[in-house]
Image 1: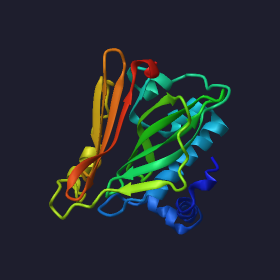
Image 2: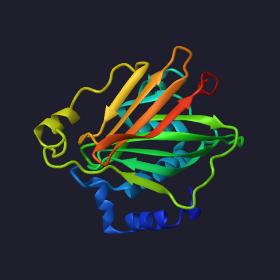
Image 3: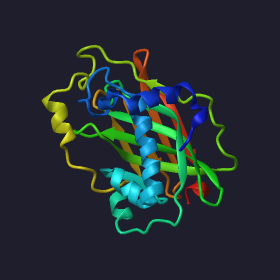
Image 4: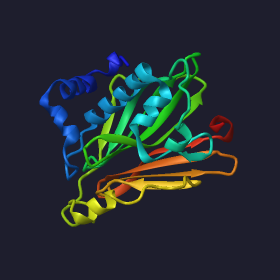
Length: 240
């Protein structure tokens, strides 16, 4: 990707990629450690891997064990991707918006993609930080558009307000949060799914209808309450 028009956002990203601040990606999640630039760097690296190694190879290598994708029914990504051949040419994509929990344990990217034949669409990817501090995607979805998304002059990033000590059970990590990170991954991808950051400041949920139309909502903690920041609807026709 070469999103040169993203201005100041990419200046911040360049600093992340070229300086010791890259270590932020590997910091233990905790209050106030959100780093949207690291998530943008992860998304860019994801697309670069797709160009260099193949689209489905990149999806496999960057997925969480419990990652879900829609084909159009929700499926466990690694099962669906296992042994699948890469297309001759991958999609090209770039992020336009980022939302992140206060503790940096969960983030969402949204942006535009272009198919090899020229068709345009949008994507949404939900990323979870693992114990090593690396981001792996837990949900990926997209849909075609009649016309490409307008490219913003500046990438938009929003971080959840941090909870006060004791206000949220996961606000300050401890044994309980570590145990939760060790929980068994999702075994079956159902028609409904949801997730939350370790500190509870970012949540997501999807619902799929019998005809495979689906919705995806993301909420972020702002001004003392959870507020929807993303609400997407994909029709049955566009889902197929």
